[in-house]
Image (cartoon, helix red, strand yellow):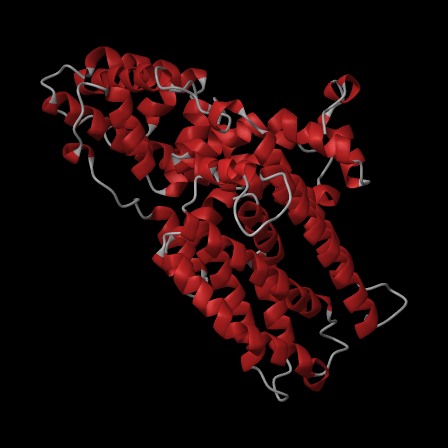
Length: 263
Length: 199
């Protein structure tokens, strides 16, 4: 028996998917007339196509509701736009003054807090009291999270808010114009947030809250990199900024804070 | 924000230009126009809503950040496919335990070519539901094969279009498709044996 020339070659699939030119297609068709295993390959591909065609197509979130998706996207894009403003120093100056960075960071923080409050207000209307009022109890009952998880999300969101100012401050520095001694204060702030970040990360991991655990892990990495550097390390700031950018830290912090506020 | 009727009829390239200039409604129109395709690919890659939504969010945030870098002579969908692919790969990388390790090219190659962990079709209980068996096998394909198969089989893209969108050589795309189909046929044959030909 002669070995099939198309065994272990992609021509049969390419024929099936209509990817061959006329000459190649004619050649494969002639081959198929005399090769049972290759005809079986084509039959199998048809069976795969039929079976997969019968599978439901999922092209939207559950119940086709895009509202939550669009809301989170809006929030992420608005914080991203703010971070980009901070990260792009004006051409006229070598770097931003600490005062202008803090002012912008504070503005961003206020905007963020406003978004968080708005989200919370939508989730549980009514005055805030020590005990749950009926509408809050209803919102809590409707929440997919347990009481313990909601509490952890709440404090995690607060911690992320505190950390956001430090991360924004680090992202705003111009590494070319900033000497290691110039950002000693930011390094100290990073160090002061580290142990809490680690605790929240471990608590979230223990409870299977992967979204919170991931953002805490990324934040922890940035804080370690920042706080462990010293005045002799001239490349540390660039490394920290690359970490913030690569891990999309600002966007992730915003999304987790929003999700937690709505929990 | 809702999208007005005028924007619905606007060409992609015009929407990109307007969105890049800060027109939020134009960006919304772009998202609304393409989100189903992005979500479908993300879901086929991830297999669940939670991860599919993460990937789709990631895609549109990257689009938002890159609006001013869009090449107007290119198809928006080709550009989107590439962003979706990168978002899927990034998502897979974040989920792997190696996510802590410094990222290297070797690590990415290993990740792209490593099958997903999980029970094989022989371990699954099913009653002749061939589509379920194949869907499970697709979920176990290495990410590169899964993307190429999904884009060819579900999205109906030509191999040359996939190669262009993913910035890969066409020969690489052919090999990925061949390897994916080979594994799916093996799953199909195994299902037939297991169910006595009922599948």
